[in-house]
Length: 113
Image (cartoon, rainbow, N blue to C red; front, side, top):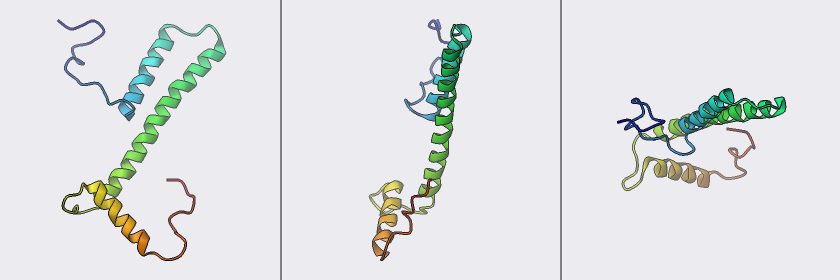
């Protein structure tokens, strides 16, 4: 028998990782469903709730963007160094290159990702 509050589609499906983009979207959707079912009496509270929901969705989008940038960087490493994870090899390559560069760092210009 399916437990209450679970559908057949969710049985056996692990929950999304805490803080992941999927988790943030799930939280936003659940919060939106609650707002639709129990609207705030005060219009300001309703607007605040909608801003919070949009904030969760915006954060999920930003995490997706950063994850894509990270994986682009990691996958640029064609082969990892023995005994290292691909992340560690990429980090070592970057640090080695930065150590060889003389003068002020061109990479630290204060620009956003």
